[in-house]
Image 1: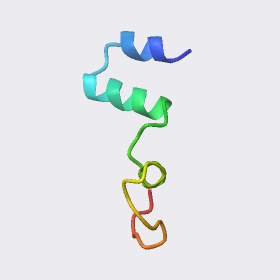
Image 2 (image 1 turned 45 degrees about the vertical axis):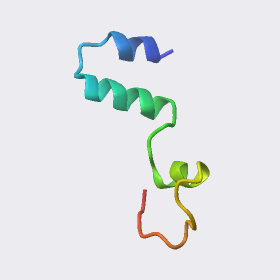
Image 3 (image 1 turned 60 degrees about the vertical axis):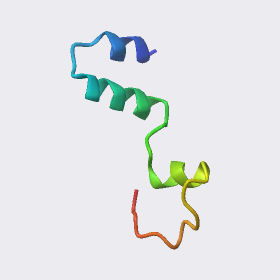
Image 4 (image 1 turned 30 degrees about the horizontal axis):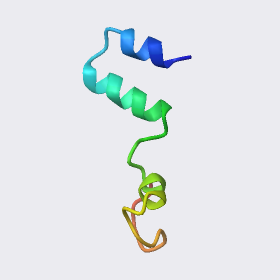
Length: 49
């Protein structure tokens, strides 16, 4: 599993948190925000992420 390697690495904390969020599919992308109900209609937005 990659998570133990991410946490034990000597990378900056911002990169570690970003990597953890990426591996867990927890980045605030347009699709994830829509699925969580944070944003409304998907077709009305101009965000491409």
